[in-house]
Length: 444
Image 1 (tube, rainbow, N blue to C red):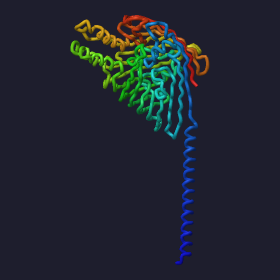
Image 2 (image 1 turned 180 degrees about the vertical axis):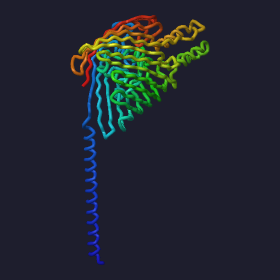
Image 3 (image 1 turned 180 degrees about the horizontal axis):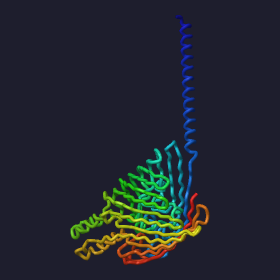
Image 4 (image 1 turned 60 degrees about the horizontal axis):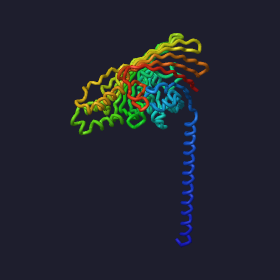
């Protein structure tokens, strides 16, 4: 083969390779464009067709009516912030979105803006889970879900869904958690006359609470539980709903207040001269301790009447957590768009401080502080509430309510009070207070 023929062969091979490279490049580009188009179409499909709903509450309460006691909705709210801004106690705005992905699959999200110690975006997300419904009988959910241990706890942020201004503080105000991250399974069966639903869950949860009055590190306490697990059953027939639930929580670490208490009693002088102080502080420790919540509730709506009640038992066995029993009963009757109602709620916590006074007067102040710490976690309190709800338009309601609360001896109750320069020493004797509140609730 001469040189000329060799050059022509090489040119031909080169042209072939160039053609093949162009074809491959075009194929890759077309493939990428096709993939991008499919991804964009899928993304566009995911963005579209969401069912978006919302709810809101604008309220005002006389939170600063008394200098020595602050009205609170629950222990996750900041005491001083609530005291200075009465409209924050019940006001909130929530958005919920749901989308069906494939037959049997859907995704649900909910975010709520409201007053709490930690108002980050992450802590404002109440729900973010994917759900699979295999048939009409069972389903499972994975992600963040509301903690529905009690009758109203799965919708207590939606003020329009219940008659009172807020859920009864004695029963609901002490609950530190509103949601959890984990897995939930539901099994349901029944017919048009009645239905039965069984559910079980497992996961973990966290919250930051402000049990006392101050806004320092020892008053803002981070509370984390893992694992948490529980199960419940709900039976519905005509106008009657019955519900029972048991849940168990394990605290993973001590709070700032408990750590500060243990640092104080670890002083060598105290350990040598009053070793029992360390034993007392250990009884406040919540790390690796379990708390069990059990509850029973009912709702009965015969005709214009509405009767609702719950009973719960909290078993902890430690000073650093809540304990005892809680119950309430609410009765209302509808007259057209108006529903006047009356409720009575009570929280029993009869724990005593079982330790003898210190051997030396120099430790008396520390002893009194340890004893007061138990009282600060004791909810021995009752309330009588009178209110009225007016549904003046579609999905809109006005509410007005007055509460008369009695806090028993040696109990902080839900409503915080502390020693302050303005008020002086905290009075641990039985006393009563009254507040009035109003809200405008709506859903959309």
